[in-house]
Length: 388
Image 1: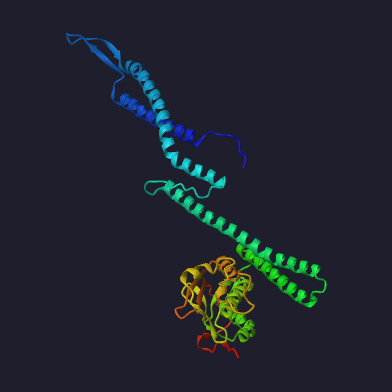
Image 2: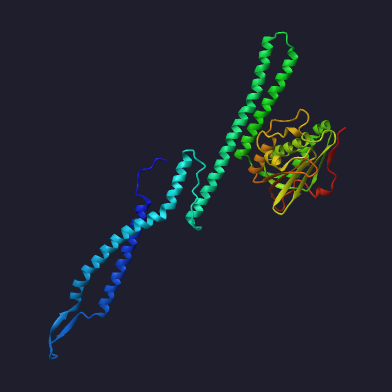
């Protein structure tokens, strides 16, 4: 924003210090003068050596003649001292702001690695500097993540286009090439490109939090996602179990369904073929509701588990079949979770596979409002399907 030049804060503080010192000096001199007027008589009788009065001497007039020029000199000294001292003190007080301003200008020019690191004990300036350093650290990490995401997205989008171009070049060079095979391969490549584009759009919408919040029962969402993916589980030979408590929260029904669907889908396709299991469970805590999805599978290291929620991290060593996805499933889950003010935790299971936990704020319905469902379903049989 363009602003007209004004008086610097240091000069304003200097004038404030000097003005305050002048006011204090004037009050002090006024108090002295009032004291003198109260306790010093107006006139005094002059006595000669023989103790005889010889005349009257005006004491207050003489005192005023002596006091006034000295008081003016004191005020002039206080003004000069206040200006000089105020300028020095203001400079020392504003030095932390100068460092923060320099760091801000560096950040504006693109240098996000610089930190203020203001020394000293905690005060208002140190708290401001620490908050600014924390903001720079988060901003630097976010920018680095966005750059990695842009590079990965460009690579992922370029791959199907390059494959399509190669297929078309082959068809052009060989007119007798099997057309049906070419169409099938182009269809598969384009389907993957469309899925990647839709995933990127969903990721962007969830990150912007542009959705209306409404009461949602996370247990019903889990049941719906599980029932939708039962055919895939049967095809993969994976057993799916769903159970748990009513889990009231607020958010977007569609996004939370997408979150749960992604988790269950990943748990199915990243599993042991023909003998794997997936368990979907919801629970209620004092302030939060919890969705847990865990599956069997190969052993996963904690280091790998920490990276699986990053974009385009597929964990292909655990993928079987044609459902590897576009590498954005858990990234979408992470974004939707954060958009709903929740936390996402990925932990390897000791026996193999993953345990993924989504914790969201709890939202109990108002008294008298009809619940989405009734009772505790933890004792009811869960939805289950087994592979052939």
